[in-house]
Length: 84
Image (cartoon, rainbow, N blue to C red; front, side, top):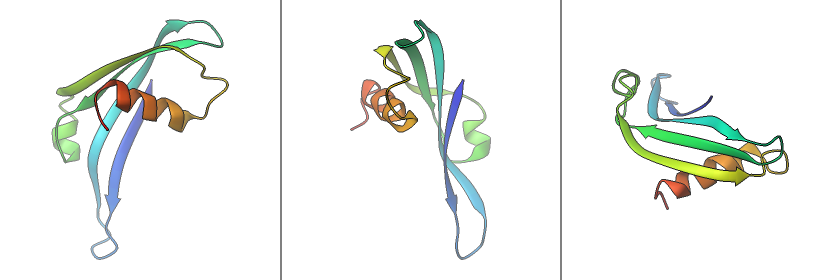
């Protein structure tokens, strides 16, 4: 599973605040074309996000994981969830 966390590292207080989290799981496919399912979670703090209350879900079929960078996977998963 891939876990994507968005954190704010304050230059003023030096505190780290988790703002968002997404999980992406490989659910099959082939060595070159993989299928993924993903979910984003509700909340704007580590405590809220740790509840893993799903906000949006998405699915990718046949993603060319060996040919593209991980950021392409993250972008396409967000698009499949309806984020623009």
